[in-house]
Amino acid sequence: MLKVILSLCLLLTPMLATAQQSLSVGDKAPNFTIKRLNGTQFHLADYQGKKPVYLIFWNTWCGYCIQKVPTINELARTYGQALEILAVNTSWSDDKELIRAFQQQHQTDYPMAFDDNATITDLFDVWGSPTEFIIDINGRIQHRDKIPQVSAKSLDAWTKPCLPEVC
Image (cartoon, helix red, strand yellow):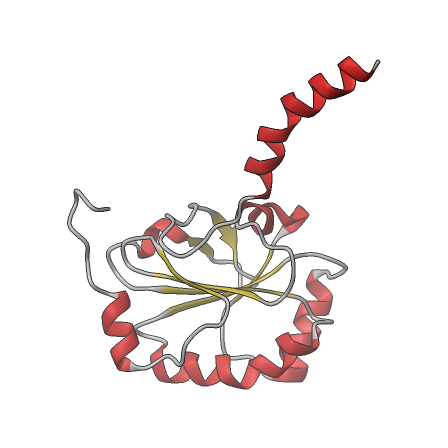
């Protein structure tokens, strides 16, 4: 019996290690498609080569997510043409009606989407909210959480194309 348990542990350990690895800076962001609450489709690949993407995984009940709304609103107003913003609700204890009520109450100025079954949330290895990503025009993750102050200088850095042999 002990031999069987040890064999299973040796077999499962590499799979568990792989499953627990999370996306980090420098990794290629996984491509996905999701429907925004306004009915339009968001395809991450559409922004590659065009503009960086600020991706926020959030929930209506997350206090820190609520505190970030004014900052994200300001980013949307100031850099909306140069930075694509998408707030993806993880669907953890939320639904579309709660999100719409949140949008009205907090007067959000940026696109939102609902991640049915947390498929994209899982794809990005999100374990808590908010979890944020800056994805540059090359499709690479430049920041995960602790997003720096967005400025024209940072946008310039995130919009630099890389050489094909590096990408």
